[in-house]
Length: 209
Image 1 (cartoon, helix red, strand yellow):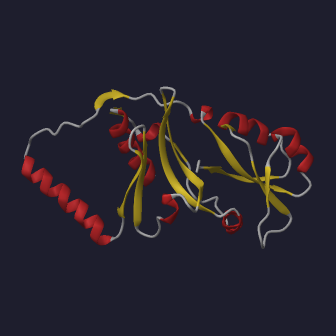
Image 2: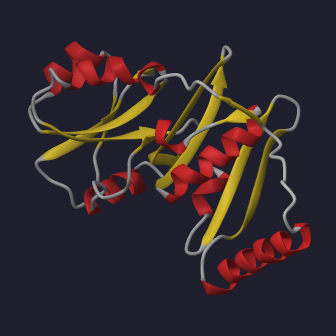
Image 3: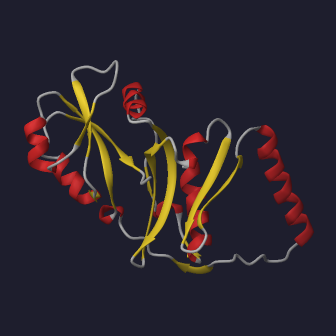
């Protein structure tokens, strides 16, 4: 929920209109297991909880969920009390803002800064730098990406029938199952295929490299 509120604020700043956190699809990390981490290691990737917002063909999406990142991605090294904001722009390309986002001293610094700001401005109304008009987010059902899927053994024929060419993944210390990476597809397409796949265990979305 913390990440959801943060991406709501950042999205309001980025796109210039009010984004409400209640409208953002949010999924936590409670379903992530030790087996998922072993698969991530086998793929040279890391699992991170990301708050994402992006625009495609004039449509704006936002979501919070665990995602698989390549270890070469700048966000893969963000750990402990550190937070980072990774931005892709049409002119600036890729930039990242990184620092401590938790812990008693960084939190106290932010709170005291806000208190001082309130004291300085007294009863003045501080105008936000985005419009009050609410931004209409596109359903994440229409968002496209690859997915990492875990299934029980013996489902290869069904996988080929539903997904076509996939990348099979095996991990040390994991038996009785295997993983695979799907082609790019929408969330809605993926949900429909998974409903027909026997032996489905779990899935993690994949961030583009």
